[in-house]
Image (spheres, rainbow, N blue to C red):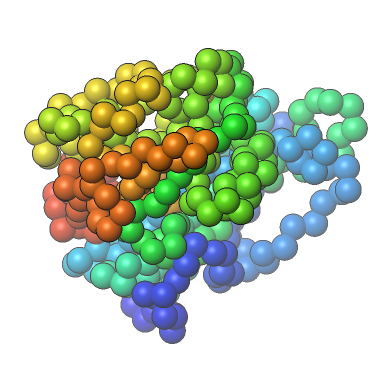
Length: 341
Ligand code: PLP
Ligand code: COI
C-alpha cells in the first residue's frame, strides 16, 4: 500500500482534509443506506437545530498500522455503543452499532494511504459525528439528521508528545450534576472553550475540573480522563457520573490488572489526597497517556515525584503496553483489535 507523501513524524493535532468521508441521512423516520463521498462540505438551512440549539454529538477513535503491516482500529464497538447512548440522551435517532462499524471500516479503507506508517509516531484520527439538520425554532429536537465520519492524520495532542505537562485547577465547571458530562455531546466542549483559552493564556496545557456539586473531588480534563499512581504502585482513577466513560481508561484498567499485575481502584478521588500520589496522567484517544508533572491550584503547585522531564515508571509501563497492543507488538485481549480488510 503506497502512502501519502507527508512528514508523518512532524504532524500535530490538526485537521487535514483526506480523500473520502461517509455520510448517511435520517429523514421520514429512517436512516438512508449511506455511503462514501469526496465532498467535505455540508449545506444546511440557517435555522438548522445544530446551529440554534447545538444538537450534535461525536466520537473519536484511531486507526494504526501494525508492526506486521495491517491496518487496525481499537475497540470501535465501544465507540459505537457510546455514540448510541449519547444519541438517546440528546433525543437523536441512534445510528445502529453494526452500521457505525461498517462506516468506520469504509472510511479507513478508502483513506488507507492516509493511515500513518508503523513507527512514524502518527495515527489516523477518526471522527464520527451526528447532528440535527432541519430548521427548528421552538426548543425541540430536529426531525432530520446527518451522520458523518471523516478521518485526519494526527501527531501528539499536546505539544512535546510524551513530555509532562502542567494543568490548572479550573474555576469553571465542564459538566453539571445530573447533566451531560457522561456523554460525548458537542455542548460539553463548547462549555470548555473559554476555560481552555484562559488556561492557555495563563501558560497551562489543560484544565483539571473538580466535581461540579462540591468542588472537592477530581473529575477529568476537557478532553481526557485522569489516572493517578500511588507511592506503592496502585492505579487509581476517578469514578463519577459526570465524566466521560473513556475507552482508553477502561482499557488501561484492564491492562494494569491483567498485563502488569497492578491493583486498580476506580473510586471517588478527593482533591486533598492528590499531593500523596506518585504519578499522574491524562488518558484518552487523542491524549493516549499524557503525563502530568504539576498541578497548579490557584498558585499552589502540586509537583509529582515523577517530575517534569519524563513519564513516571508506572505511567511508562501502561503507555508501552497499551500502544504495544494497538500497534500489534503485544497480543491483545479478545476483540480489542479490529482489522480493516
Ligand atoms: N474525557 C473527555 C472529556 C474526552 O473528550 C475524551 C475523548 O474522547 C476522553 C475523556 C477520553 O475518552 P476515550 O478514551 O474514549 O477517547
Ligand atoms: C478524543 O480523544 O477522541 C477526543 O474527542 C478528545 C478531543 C479533545 C480531541
